[in-house]
Image (tube, rainbow, N blue to C red; front, side, top):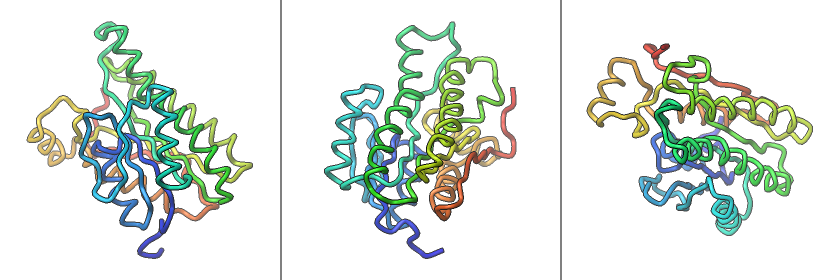
Amino acid sequence: MTDRPLENRRVLVTGGAGGVGRETAVRMLAGGARVVSADIPSATRHAKGAVVYAGDLSRQDELDRLFRFVDSQLGGLDILVACAGLPANALMDISDNGWREVIDANLVSYVGCAKKAIERIRRSGREDGQIILVGSISVHIKAVGESVYNASKGGVAMFAETLRKEMIPEKIRVTLIEPGAIATHLQPYSAEKLKAFEHSLEMLPAAEVAEAILFAATRPPGVDVVTLRIEPLVQKIV
């Protein structure tokens, strides 16, 4: 593999100012890619060198605006990395607006971004386009309290596998990344506590999830990383 395996590839990272998104953008840029990093306006810790977009991707008008921005900045798209997301309480502990926001952010935005990305990959004429969706191993654990979150991430898992089959004739690869607990701001803990969880091997550093995404993104065109599950050694299972 060359030192810049993503030379001149055009990449969109959603959730780009979060831990996993930022670390992914850093690695994509280092690999030679041109990157748009998209996140909500209040999230501002984007990777240095990425072109920044601020907007709420659960809204169709904002999603449309994002892809017009991608077109103007990158002239098209080769790779989508969708890792925007919100945590959630159990169904009976969350407001009606709250659970809808989670589904919109964690599932609806993925579907919308994938559709827009595929339209652009089709126009590119390349045969190495890729959609990388970040799901969660929570859908396998099915822990009490994660009903709403699992509804969204379970949808992502089923969407990814079905879309992958639909895109095979067009040589567009679809990858699902399923990380375990990650030490990021989405967890309800202080920075010090998150570091402690990393040290005790109960949570993954965001950089390790980004490495998994990079691995999938740098395989040859004929190699499809279908599902990549990565978790800390001491992953919570209840």
